[in-house]
Length: 246
Figure 1 (cartoon, rainbow, N blue to C red):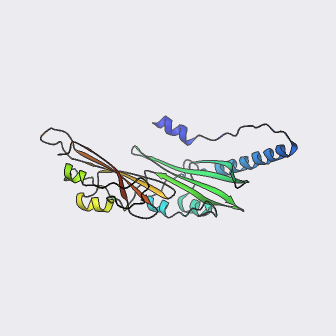
Figure 2: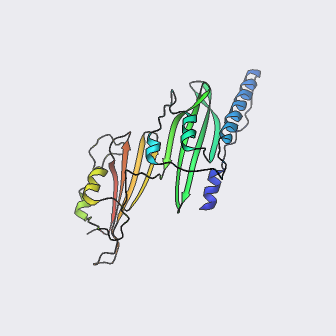
Figure 3: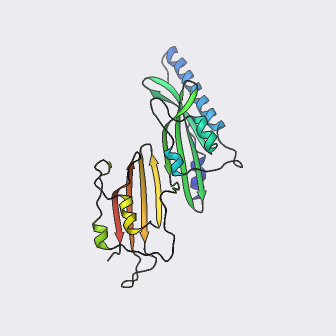
């Protein structure tokens, strides 16, 4: 696991050479390569020193970032000032409406108590300033979504209760599925959860696990639920699984 993460954190893109057939193409290629190198160098210069690096991201921080693919969102300077320098970065040239534009991707990673988490942000250069155009995270903590770590917790799920849960469509636009808020009001917080998001769409996976085996078959009971959230709306159920329910 450590070797895989180490490789991932230190991976970088390499530009490939291309054939040219005219002086204009040669000049354009040289200019593009120069801009790409500039973006790559700039991204690498932003990487934090290992001794100074800190990971302070939570879901609420991520949700507060504004991104816009056309006009740009939260500035790079504002994010660095608030959350510190990343531990990984890369740069390239993107072609937008026929115009070549420098872009960079910065990543903040965390490995704590066998829990892997990251934030990945893409910025584009608008005039002389880099602004946010895309955002993604995996496995961040959220103070608004508590978990139940009590060893003596109750497990009240039954097969009938599980079967009564309504599924939302994968796009999350029908708003007819069971919501996370409804479920925890009946069965309490889950024992495990995993959060992830990319741009406008957020995903939440939770598990309810019985604290001790069922007396009839000596097997643990479990309910796994997956939710989707569009923008800042409610969490809607899109997938459900169960094991050994009565």
